[in-house]
Length: 212
Image 1 (cartoon, rainbow, N blue to C red):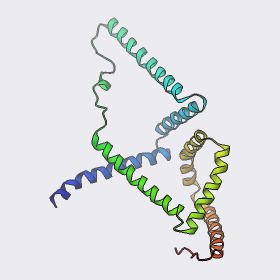
Image 2: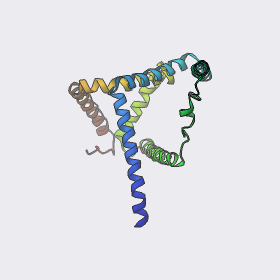
Image 3: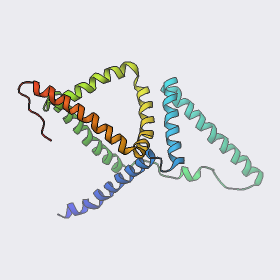
Image 4: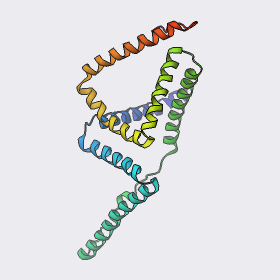
């Protein structure tokens, strides 16, 4: 009992941290802070577009050179300024050099455990789909894989990442503004798909309709 009570504060803190990160992601995707979201979206899109033109080694090298050009130039500028003014301000990046940027083992364990839970859920779901625990769900998965064969023929993985990034930063805002219309048409399409799958399942011997 005592051990459980000791673990409760850390579990609560961990849950609060995860909730805080979720809120930050939502704020980014919904453009709550235009400047912050613009920087994140622009930098991510620029990185993916750069990777589509150059190799990852070239992109990392160019980014590192650009960053070094800025920091070295600023370091020399501050050094000259201190020499002219005869001041002793010290290293211009001292505040950042003194900061502890190491990753704690607790943080690694927390996110590794969370990742492991998601991986196990994915493995169980794939087993359920491939071994046809539910016929309708396996048919849906087969249709999705069939569609993805055409998507893969048209786009490579990096192009899909770029489209996914653009969609992630645009779809939430669009859905928020036109939620009623989107929900209406989604309901119509979903009903049609369920009707078709129901007819297919009814014609297969030994299959039972899925109760909802």
